[in-house]
Image (tube, rainbow, N blue to C red; front, side, top):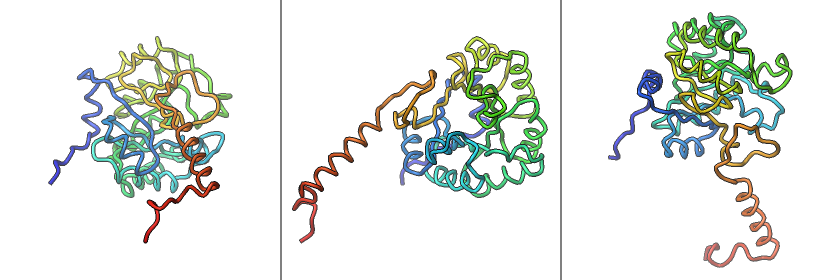
Length: 266
C-alpha cells in the first residue's frame, strides 16, 4: 500500500512561525484543483469566498452562501491528503452572534473534511473568535482590507490605520486565533505586526516579512481576466492555453478533422 501522507494540523501550522518556515497558501474550490495544489506541497489551501468573483462571476465576495461554500469545501477536502484546509465563513455568518457563528462553523467542520474556518475582523470579532475556539473550531482571522466590508471601506484600498490594525491583530490573537491574514497593508506595518504576534501572519499585498503568503489560484495561474492587483504574481498563463486548445478543437470540428480514425471505435 502507498505510504499515507500526514495532514498538517492546526498546531503544526501555527508552529511553523517559530520554526521560521515560510507558509504557502492558495485558494481552491474543487476536487481536481485541490489535488494538484496538495501534490505541489503547499502548506495550506483556502476555500475562499473569493469564489463569488472568480468562479461565480460576481463583482464582490458577498454573494456566496453557507451551503455553497460547504459544497465546495467538501470537494476540496475530499482531495487533500497533506495541506491544512481552511474555509471562509461567508458574509454575514460571523455577524449574527456567537451561537450562530458556532452553528455555522460547526456545520463546515461536520460536513466537510476541512480543519478550520477563517473570518474577517479583529477587535470587534474577538467574542466570536473566542466562542468558536472554545467550541473546538479553529479560527484564522483576517484584518486590513476586508472584502466583505467593501461597501463600508469604500472600495478595495490599502489600509493604513496603524493603531486600528495593531489593535485588531492583537485582539484576534488574544481571542484564540491560530493565524491571521493581513491584506493590503503597508509592508513595514505588516513587518511590525508579524514581529508583535506569536501566531503566523499570512500576507496578501502585505510585503515579504509575513510568515506566509496567500494568492487566489485564478490570479496565480493567469486564469482571471481584467486588472490584476499590484500584489499578484502570475506564474502561468493558463487562460491562453485553454483559449488556444478550445480554438484548435473548434477548428478541427469545423474542418471535419476531429474525430479521426484513431478516436473512433470499430
